[in-house]
Image (cartoon, rainbow, N blue to C red):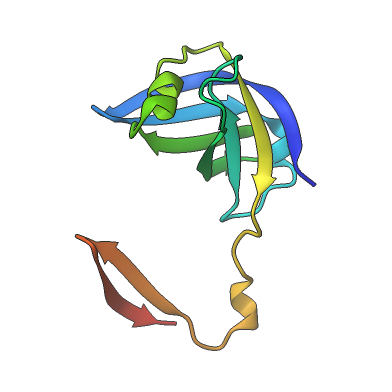
Length: 125
């Protein structure tokens, strides 16, 4: 069941001009999240912009309760999000989505790579 909380932004990194990595203290979400799930972030306290921003979970440090996300500034909402400062509280809901499947249950898995708007086959496992 998803949890809503105000997570502390404990580390903010600017990876490129328009790409950011946030580390959030969100033990309640990290404890129940699975790979492939996402969170939704409210970027302001008001109603503008109205909708939350869905961002995939990049990494989780279960021992320390830290959730990491990486996002690109693509519009007004993510631009507002990129202006958050370390120690700010971020309103998030998660984990959402079903996560990834269990690899052990499948005999053949294809690994694909998305690059330059095309998919290329790498190998099967």
